Length: 227
Image (cartoon, rainbow, N blue to C red; front, side, top):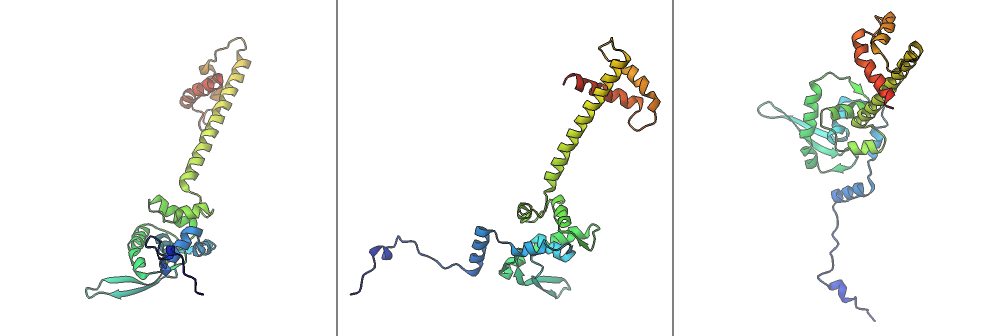
């Protein structure tokens, strides 16, 4: 006896499962699992050549194959014959042709400066970030520990510099207070002019000019007294 499938299988409201194209499947895999085997491979290299670095920044794997020809007007034209994305997946060459614009932009800006023939991967990323044209996969590189965001590094250094400056201000203020207590133990208010006179024996040392001391010492003393 043959069983009849449930009516829901014939319902027009039942979602139709469509077969994904290879390109769509690869994109789905990449989005779901964040696969970037090729980028992992390239970051194992100590250095990248200029061609490798700029291609990767633009979204190309250096294994991409280009075709070059000369137009009737003598202009050199370049197109993508085999497009392999920076993450290692092969895609439609037409998609690669859309990335030729960014690649040529990277090449023009790079040629405007002086750079080594080969550089560490971090060099290319730092350069692109300074120019305001970071690669689309910059976040991936940061998340995977291949690159330290220069803006984060700058912020951290700034915080460290402020902390160091605060430490020196309090240290100088404390020393001034100790010096004054030994010099005039009966007087609470510090006479900065007399301290500067005592420091005149160090005249000539960087930062110890009378003008600089008059500017900095009041801040240091005020910082230690208000703590």
